[in-house]
Image (cartoon, rainbow, N blue to C red; front, side, top):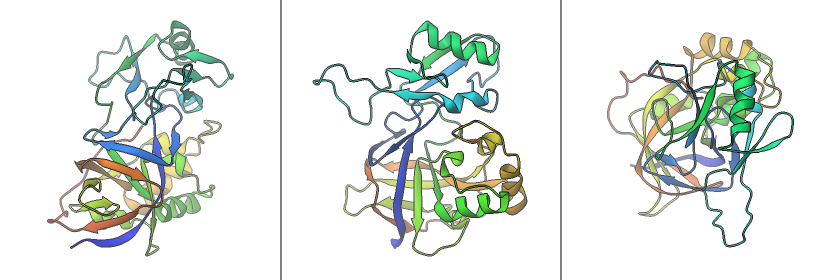
Length: 261
């Protein structure tokens, strides 16, 4: 049976993997996650591994690049599924997203050539939707002696809980989360804990690392914070929506080594 657990406090999407995110009031949740989320990424052209994408774990400056969308014609669509057209660099230059200048700038900072790639269904690590509660963010950053900055954790959905308790997301494993009411309300199945990497150490405004953040996650909660989910029913997400939870099955054996970048 569905039980209310909180509300949607914030929504985020990340058009380019590891670059700065966008805070949204509404978003369309499709079968492959939020529309427009991680549809683009830089590929390391000399990399022959199974994970060639350039992430901020290898180039922290990536978090300082901000995807933008310039609407040059009022008839252009501006819905949540649209790709960015430009990127603002840390030096405040606005460069076309598929242009050679942007690839050259990122490659120069990384020290090896890269090229922008576009994926139809997004470039994910293990699952298409990430969720974390405000209480979890506050507890981790408190233990690390840092300001409670949710952008370190790069979620798609930030939850404000009715019952304040950090790491409550673990209780949702194996169940489903419904956002809003009605037969058309979007639903995700909670599939795994989100095992964290050094991305959480990076200040989203300066890219300065604070290793104590990841250390706090490891020490306090076995290196996990938040959860991943897969889409069961697509629909419209909005800030302020009621979140309902229903338990299904035994989550005791669920885990993941995924990393949200």
